[in-house]
Image (tube, rainbow, N blue to C red; front, top):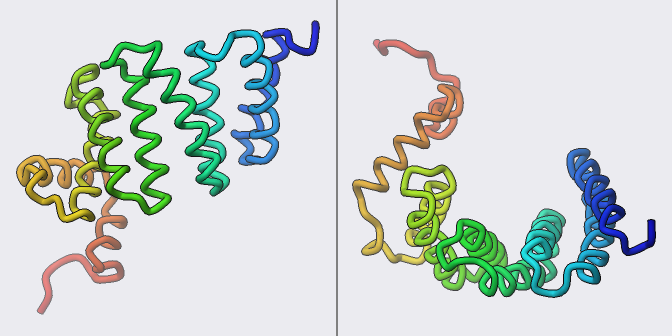
Amino acid sequence: LGENHPSLASSYNNIAMIYQAKGELDRTLEYALKTKDIFEQVLGENHPSLATFYNNISMIYRAKGDLARALEYALKDLKISEQVLDENHPDLATSYNNIARIYYDLGDKLVAYDYISKAVEIFENSLGSEHPHTKIAKRFKMQLAMELGKTDEIDPEEALRMLFETLGDMSAEDLKRLLGTEGEEDGDEE
């Protein structure tokens, strides 16, 4: 195999996934970038698979705390995704969602809110309001709306329903921690 053969890129990608599973982000990034380099040459600059690699690299940089590089690769992903995907494709929503989270991490909540709003709209149109991706994005949008004081954009009934869904997933111990009642005895007080 040549040094730019797609099979070699696939092998590099598999190695990157193994390092990621082991929590070794530097090695993950090393092999993810090798994969990207080959696929940029082989697939061309607007291939949907390249967008996926850019997204993966963005998430590695985000996990490493390098938000500037994370945003750089997330925007490369978005540029391709907007060109090659339908406007209601869930992968496009994922791109918007990831960019929103990077902007949030950078402290730019207003820009994050714009991106998460786009993600929610696409997830609802493509996957429906009950899909887990839609629910997660809606929770984040609601959180941002609260932090930005955009309470007029929050449906109180939906917020309450989402709160109960979240609490329903919590263990009794986690719920006690949240309520600040950890260590108290269950039962009637005298």
